[in-house]
Image (tube, rainbow, N blue to C red; front, side, top):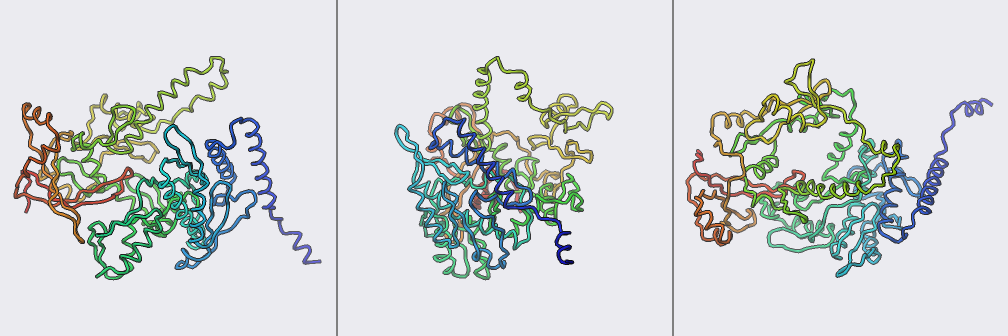
Length: 564
């Protein structure tokens, strides 16, 4: 009797199965209502992609505590399994095929890859006048291409990415991570794969359609037989004491990743980066790790140190007073401010004469073409639209978060956007941004308002170079023209070497005659400038996110630059 009373006193657990069943039934009713209203063909690819997006959005809206994407109608919910850290990438993997109408699970990666390749025969094909277009039916992907080989590479990367997410799923329990709070609607969208995966080891030019085949080739053909643990990838020349550091170093060349976030799909080169990724989204509001410059909170002291480096300029521009915290930011500054537009603006708009320096510039420019179409569509809206519908379309008022620090406190001006505050500072107060900089920068204050940043943090040696005048004060406009000439071929330890020289300014008659001839022929006839003041610098190529892709050591000849 006592045992029964104790059982009766315990609170009843909610029926999880009934809750999931009710949620699935609601989703099916929602889909049936959409099908009755939509007269579009069920086999149309746009309908399939939209239906998948609505299903994922509906399922994610019901997630409260679980960070994983909810299972389907007939699939059981599986909890992550705690696997030893050294065996996390091998044991108890549950790789899921998310192809349309296929929800098979695999524990063996080779069988999983073979299964994914079989779906290449089930691609959706859209016929065009002169060619056809293949569409990927992987859940929330919708990638389109007219090149079948590129689509095969894309599908193989889905298999590789699904394996990383399976590792990250068990990694939640092994690494004791909280839930990821990012949007998962783009978890299966992959980077572009326009060219084959090519091995750039010196003397090896093999290409592969599967990225895992490239990793296996580098491991078996090069890393295992590398003499003195030397990296000969594209003339890197780095040497290591043991083979394992070389193996880890090669990930920076091949792009290999070891784990991915199961919720948002981001993949990382180490477990530490996944842990930091989750911790950045789960910051305790009472944490003591707050940035002294901008006030941003961080979960750990390590993340605070990484963030603080963004406020300190460690690299100075050789042509103006600009300083930057990273080499990528400095390279971007040079491209915008010091390189001639002919050579820096390489991204062409297909609809007009616009040319952008970075891919991001072209992406933002393309919005101007789509915005005009939206306005045209708005003008064709029926005038019989009710007042209630017009009120719904009105955007809510944006809060004014940018405050002027030069106005009196009793009549302080506030703005909704930083560019409006910039216009106010220049026109009303006559403020000017520092020489070498392109704009004002704002930081959040204690009261939650953004105000102008009036302090620039630099390393001591960088400040001394700018103050003592060792850096020449050239014009920050895009007037400098360079001539590039190859002077040495690549070897096992060094890449190709180039000599970059500044072109001499010419008068109008010479410039006209030069413009009439081809630039390439002109550069072949010009002899390189010989100067004793030669400085060896490193030129870095960066992508649209600011990450360094490759770097080259070159000889920079700058007239008038004195070196010790």
